[in-house]
Length: 275
Image 1 (tube, one colour):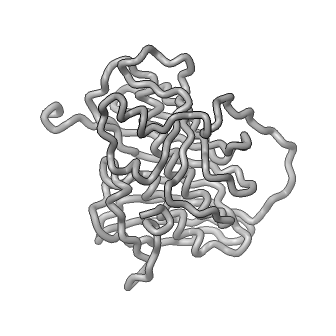
Image 2 (tube, rainbow, N blue to C red):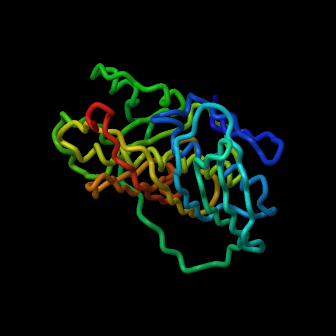
């Protein structure tokens, strides 16, 4: 099921409802997928001409299979608006987010970052091929996304020349859209799943732990919709005390910064290892 179908909202008894698609699970529903549901709900209520500016989200609990209620509460209305979004199952909150939107576009002096110099996706091998060659099983989540790493490595390989992990990605089932809220959902998914790979890209030994998302903040830079491929530029240069911190930026093929985000992942040991 594609991202648009997997985040579809229907009207429930008290608020919109989304039925979670298990195809978007990693250690439970992927954090970016959950955040995308919140973004879509705000897009359905935002005033005409608005676009997303910032999402700040807290993953309060792991969602269970089934439906989630999506409550959107406007806090500030006008040319710039703020919404609080709560995803809940029964009386249990699973995600809490604050989302800024705006219709304002006053000109400012341009400061533009320089995109990384990496090969285009057309000249790179797929992540599926590279992993299959190593005999590593691919989790079902990656049936949703095609990846083409620009500097692929595993922990058994020599350290990477560049500490950042660069990977072109596109949703396998995605139609171009001019809706800025739907477009923002792609970067939420890709930024959230970039923190953990950014961590293991720096490792030289296997990690005996998982690291689900604890929080996620993403800033959207506006502009025209990007093409099919987005470059994930991920780096995680701080870990310890049970936390992994990472920064991820998405770029268009034309070298335009699409969104910038960061998040904390909470280290969790297997049950046997944690006692």
